[in-house]
Image 1 (spheres, one colour):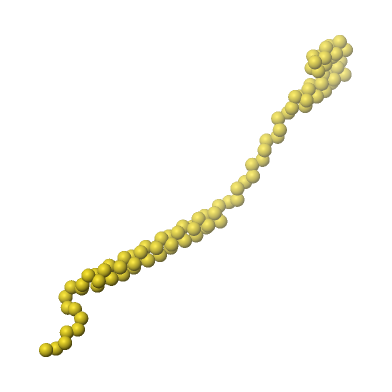
Image 2: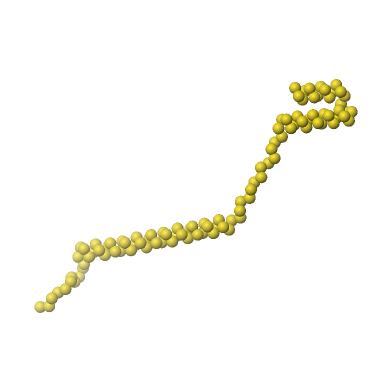
Amino acid sequence: MPLRRGRIGRPGLLGAMARSAVVAGTATATSNAVNRRAARRGAEQQAYTEQQAPPPQQAYAPPPAPTAADDTVAQLSTLAELHSSGALSDAEFAAAKAKLLG
């Protein structure tokens, strides 16, 4: 009678578990590699997009609104021009100036 080596037919419990572990490990390794590759491609695409985008333009602030002091000075200079041209009398000029400053 010849010696029988190994098992013939279906694998035993340990063989099935070992095969399942190998398949699961291979699937996990493949999935991780695919995820890393996708993340790397996404990062490269984002870097390329940022590189191609034009630099942001600086927005210039609008000139400051005239303050009350600037407005008063402008009105006083207008009154002085009107007074020097003769359009306002001395009394009218004094009254307008007092109203502006008071």
